[in-house]
Length: 68
Length: 361
Image 1 (cartoon, rainbow over the protein chains, first blue to last red):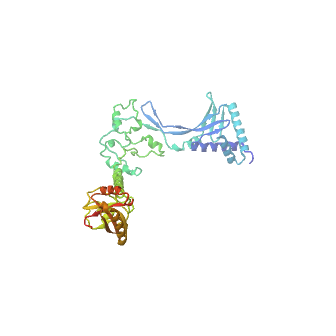
Image 2 (cartoon, helix red, strand yellow):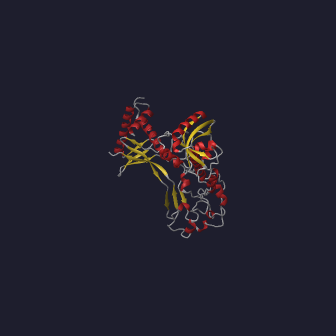
Image 3 (tube, each protein chain N blue to C red):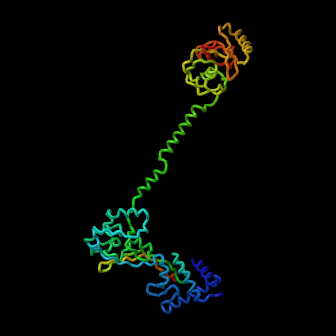
């Protein structure tokens, strides 16, 4: 295959971004922005009835658009 | 980063990097166009890009979010009931079963559990002492250490943050995942018993150094020639004396007598009081008695008017008998040397002082 189709590009890009994020790395896509991992530590949330919810820590995929 | 992105894209797609770059640019342009026209665009496999007042927002797909959060997979939010007075029954001690996951040092702590103050409540956290104080202010908003508050019933079991971050997939039965650490007393003692006490190497070193010093002082003095040029010291007198006879030499020369009469001279002994004996000037030392007689005659002729006796002293040194021509009799080596200076014209310049014990002659 000489020139990949946009669908193929989209899938390859998705795979690359996902793998990089799983490793904890950030990916810069020229023309679009940067995908990175946003880590949130555990938090406690107080409910009105006095109960408290403990949220576990988590990693979220995040995106910063390129300045244009 | 982008360069390697293009490279990786090319590898994935099985095309040249230039083609990959071109295709990517094309794709991005399409995305941008979608964003401009519809206000949002779909990134298959990743999520949605939505244009808003703040800018571009990214909403990840559930699959991507789950994949990225793999380190904390399975952790769910936990709701904790506020502490109530029921939770702290001092009489009840609950020891959870199945402590195989605990470290070995903590199994000993488990045996102490019934008596330790930490285990008067359900042994879930180490801060069990703090919550009883907070039981008064049960529903108030000053509960800070919420993760430490144990619920009255087993579910939902609150997991301390430490165990939550260890990514346990299911909430375990109430296990004390945090215990007061057992002081490693025995380990310290074992370390001491295994090796030598601290001071032993230092003491050994000092002993060795002392032995070396003693050896150096006693045994490794530099040697001196047997025929010693006249020097104002007793050292030359001593080496020949022990070879002579059984004179009871009170001087340290007796030490040298024990050794073979080699030219080595031991450490110059302190000037001890000389044993009964006289000192004479040796003007010749030969191995033949006849030769000694001839030398003696020669000196008698020159020295007779001065009233100096000339005798022959025979000594055995190392198997050979040497016959020495002794001139004069003096009661001290200094006296002998003084006489030698006076007689400098008739005596050879290398005449030396010999102590002659009174038993000889």
